Length: 286
Image (cartoon, rainbow, N blue to C red; front, side, top):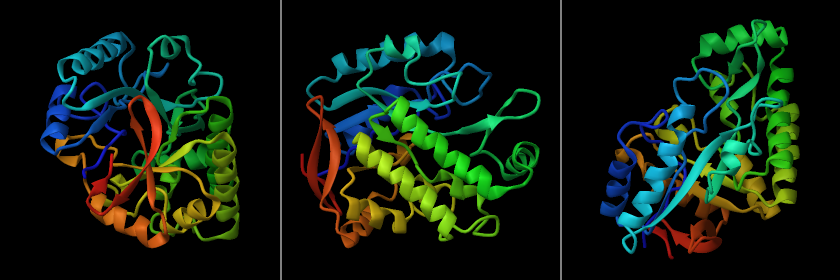
C-alpha cells in the first residue's frame, strides 16, 4: 500500500523544483500514481500562476514525463483552476485545448479592488483586511458568503473534477476572532455548498496543507468532513505540495481522522478513471 497525490505545484507556478524532481520523489516513495496541478494561467499579472507563455511547455513536459516513466508510475496532467466570473474559468479555450486529465477547482479571488485589481483572499492578512474594508465595508459575513457563493457557481458552471481546499477562507479568521466557523450563518453557507458538490458529483479533496503550512487544521475542517460522510460525497486525500518533501505530509494522521469519522474509501485517478479504493493509515490499496 502507498499513497497518491493529485494536488501538487512545481516551479511552473508557486512551487520549487521542476516537475521531474517531484516525480522522482514520488517514485522513491513508492507511489502508484501522481498528478501535476500547477496553478492555471490567469488573465492578470501573477507571481504564483503559470505564465501564459509557459503553459504549452508545462503541458509538453508532463506529456514527456508520461512517456519517459511509463510502467513505473501512473502520471496525470492537471491544473488547479481559478474561477473568476467574466474573466476566467474552465471553459477558457486555452484550457480546453490542453487535453488535461483532470482539474482541481479553487477560489483564490473574491471580486475586485476599486482600481480593478483582483482581490486575493488567501495571501497575507493585512491585504485581506484592506480588501475587506474597500469591497465589503468590513462586513465579514457578506464577504465569506460571497466566497462560498463563488464556489457554488464554479461547481455549477465549470464543474471541476475536484473541489480544492473548499474552506480555505478560514485562514483569515484569525483563530476565530474575525469569524466563527461554527456560527449558524457560516454552517449554512458550507452546507449549501456541499449540496452543490453532491448534486454535481464533484470529489472534495481532503487537503493536508493547512496542518503543515497554515497552522490550522485540514481543509475542510473535521466538522465539515463529518457532514460530507453523512451525505455520501466522494473524497480524496491530497497534500497541495509545493516541494518534493511535502508530497505525503500528514497523510497517516489525516487518514486516521477520516477512518475515525467513518470513511472507508478514497477516490483515485487510476487507469485514467476516477475509482474508489479502500485505505488505512499506510495508504490506498490500488
